[in-house]
Amino acid sequence: MRRNTWIPWLGSGARAAAAQPGWACRARGRARARLGALRSFAKLLPALGAGLCACARTPLPDATGTHGAVAAAPLTPAPLTPPPALARATRAERAAPEPRAGSRGEPPSQHLFWIQVGESRLALSFDPSAFALPPAELMAWVERCARAVATYYGAFPVPELEIRLRVFDGQGMRGGRALATRPPRILMDVGDASTARHLSHNWSMTHEMVHLAFPSMASQHLWIEEGLASYVEPIARARIGWLSEDDVWKEWLGNMHQGLPGPGDRGLDHTPTWARTYWGGALFCLLADLEIRKRTQQRYQLRDALSAIVAAGGHLGVSWPLERALRVADEATQTTVLADLYREMKDQPVAVDLEALWTTLGVAWDSGGVRYTDAAPLALLRRDFVLGPGVAP
Ligand SMILES: [Zn+2]
Image (cartoon, rainbow, N blue to C red):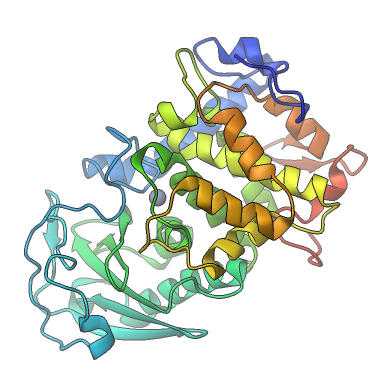
């Protein structure tokens, strides 16, 4: 495992630990890590119960087919006539995956609801009679997710979006999919007995919307798509007050270790495991965000780099080489952080001393909550990490 020289917490203390089964948890952190893993697993249970649902931070059988490439099954014709802009997609582009076992699939009496978010128009379709929740609550949930993403990026990343809520018997959400159709489409399975609490605790719709803001990648780079969505989603929700700063740090403190390289790891481009795809990608984003802030004295952050990609036409509906996306992103921050980090981590396992990283940032577990240390070396960088500049924690 290579030792990194330009980011001090890379390749130091965690090297030996990462080479062992069980990841790099020190003795004091093991219980917390197990708790984090349990929380993470609990988060995934609905999707696991549904078999496989791609793009929901669920374990993946491989690293392909998350976006766009879906099974070609004829779409049940909707009873509503879509407006011209939504009718552009071809029959093939409108192909939707077969409903999974236990799902009722496309409801026969779906209605179309329009949601305006800034300049973007979202077409939300579902069967109002299928859910215990009133339609207004489902619409408010989708609008809230869209507002979180729009707040993070400065605007919703695509002008038009189709969202289809499919129903299954039960509660909660079974992940979702963001499809590179024209316009893009998000499919989400929602339990018919879901409550307002399920909507409030849901992260997957926001996660899918974040996918809209990054171009489709070759399969070996799936980690950047999933990592970005996993990293940005809680920040985006925190910036509209949906999550607290503590909520976000707890998620990272409890789960980020899952992205560390394990035995036999061959780098992010060549290790398509679930943990390296989702949390390895998220860890890459965390390191990039931190390094951009360091090198630019807080003038820029990862958000600026990601927004530049959107501004340059990078969205789910287009395919870019990863190098192009990173070049656009680096130009926006006037650095080479993303290219450097990618070169470092793409084809070799690079250990990250997470304990040292958290200590340097001044963030730690404390009796189930989070303790912040303002005297830590990078505490100033940490302060607006989650909530953004100018927002008191
Ligand atoms: Zn995803």
